[in-house]
Image (cartoon, rainbow, N blue to C red; front, side, top):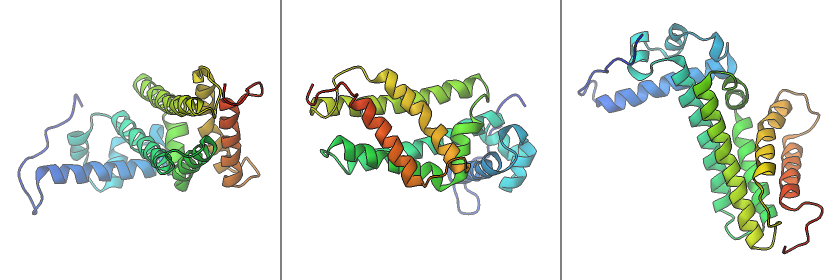
Length: 219
């Protein structure tokens, strides 16, 4: 299939073409979340299988997407974007509060979102890895976005005298890279700990980045 087909226009069944298209796209993404996140996975799913799971036709698939890679890319952005909005909302609710409180809230919000549905964590930590050059660029771009968020919080905390004044990017990159790995190991049953214990460990790691052993408060 060379590319997307052109979907029909005009109203049908009381809904506009845009409304019907949005509904089809949602159904394909919902089906992909189930198949990629709890079924055969991205590599084991076919266009025909995804279309059947969505209750739609392969023609309708090609009206919305060109390839299954496009579906995984859209699904990954949706899942990770919602996790980001959850973390940002927790930070916004604690504007002006100490960095320890803000770090705990953001880590809890992120962990609660991605572990609240095991399929989400599989998408963000397994299915997108090695799924192709475009997905890898997208994954690294999203990780860089999370690193930027940690660095911004670190810089703001340093201005308030709550963290060391230094370049936190290297340590923040390591922290972001380890978060999903730790959460995935926990959700897989490899860790004898509760989710609160895991989050508390993440908070300790983050605060250790912001306040290294040689740090003297306010400098």
